[in-house]
Image (cartoon, rainbow over all chains, first blue to last red; front, side, top):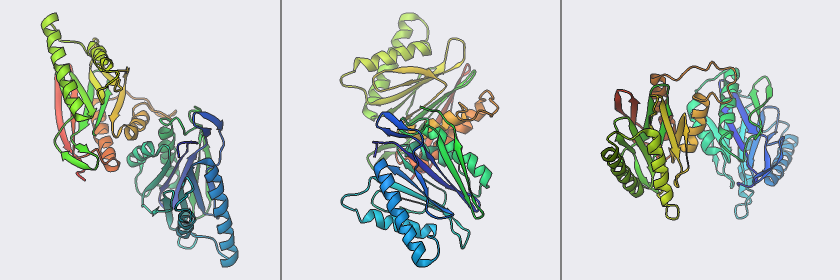
Length: 202
Length: 205
């Protein structure tokens, strides 16, 4: 899990969620790419952030997109974030004794109820659905420390953006394997705003 | 187990530690602070394997007393830092399993914090978190005291009240997410007038 380096965090705000990830892709100490995608849209208002081994990030996101597409074709509606968590959990547990080295985070706003939702899983699919924030990657300790201190309930979208940005940038600055900037998605009922952050490029 | 935190200000220094003594998933004691007074204006915070903490602090107390007898004055903070570094490196091939933070006032009366690794590498810093919750606390201190990633923030000098309030809040956060940190926090504030200690309870779970 410490081969490539990654940091993903999701937070709940007032009728919105935010999900952020770093952009580094490295092979242990050597940085190979500074714009590696770790957050993937699985619907209009649902995003999945993946951490861990880069090849499994790519494979799991592709297989998940496949399942999401099939669901949409069969049901004529999009996957809700809660259901997507169940799909990911199933996908990962199928490989219980030879797992994907990948820990996902789901963040989204339910399109019918408008409720914000976040969840995370371990590499074999055990889900957790906290009310405040989820963290994953090589910088989990640093992210836990930052989020615990700066998160408050019912933050407005603009405030949530500032909060999650400070949390991820300060946390990855203390992790050699994660960083090289960050990307933040703020998901609300009406739309998604995406911003790229410039941090320490080391 | 245990966590230690040191913050230096313009004319003061703050050091804090939790009071939990744990081993793997058990708690041995809830009232064991990791701060040790070496002189009227210097405190050593020592986290890690408690056996080595007790031995090292015993040695340091002895060494600072002997210095007083030989030199006729109290040892200064930078000199103690050098001494501690030597003591730790002396055991390079069977180290003291301790994470140390030495806090005091320098020759000019400014706050000084020295962070050490287990074999004596040390550096003077403005703030340093050490011990089991170090990785949780250090980025938070970078952000709040060092104004890391905040290019537009107004940089104000750190006041004593703000420093103590920050230390209390930061230990609460550490106690939430680190199982080895909790029960209580002891905060020592060092100024030219001496050392003031205070105790605040933390989560006991």
